[in-house]
Image 1 (cartoon, rainbow, N blue to C red):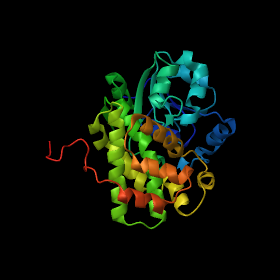
Image 2: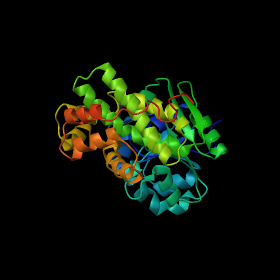
Image 3: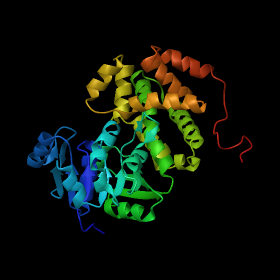
Image 4: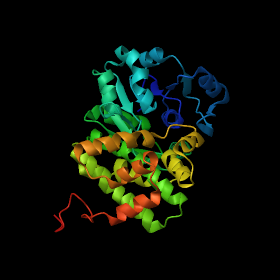
Length: 340
């Protein structure tokens, strides 16, 4: 089913552009809003996003626009793909236009002030909106190149989930539904931190056993943390948990992995981020996560270790030695050793 009215995508980055093209491929008319008029003009004339998704043709149904109030007025279904740091200040001035709208957050980050997830910021700004979260192993360029991809739409609003599924489902993109939006969103935000560690390990030539250990222990750590906050541990066995963690920790296309790789090659954090040229949410998430883990007294040795490397002057070797000397725990926290 195609929406009768256009669908909005807020954000001119790689993921927003990939989602806009997906919607257009399914016959939707898409208004893709961005703040920068020069970027919008370049996308209109060149029919591609030269800054963030070079070489991918924009489908005819995608219309790059810069008038946010007009875009919101024209659309009921709105995908939000602006960076976490900008989300509140972009939407706050137009909050009155969001009443009753279906807002789908695709941004994987956490606001430092009060440990707010993106959907919680949307709820703060637009308490009368209907809110969902889209997350999963979804590298923007692969979506745009039609690699087979699956994602999760999470909301307790079943109709919203169905609308998003019908809008995005296509030959190469499947959308599964979940009611645990908190767990789905936490999975998307937390895995970015571990991707930095995985990138560092890859740059330093660590073996496949090591990478596997890192990914598996990362999953244990992020699940432990999310459950403490009220998420369902089973969510982390799905696409938004282990699925997203695997792709982000093993793909050189992942922005957070690239930052970690540059760090592993000896670059400073500033230079690593500058080389990337766009937002790596994991760096911001790391600081917030370390503070929250300490406050909740959740054991997160990988998070503490990465924080020590990036902000406390420790080396990866020192941190790995400390991890290997740590007290062995049970393998999976939510199963007793007897198997029940």
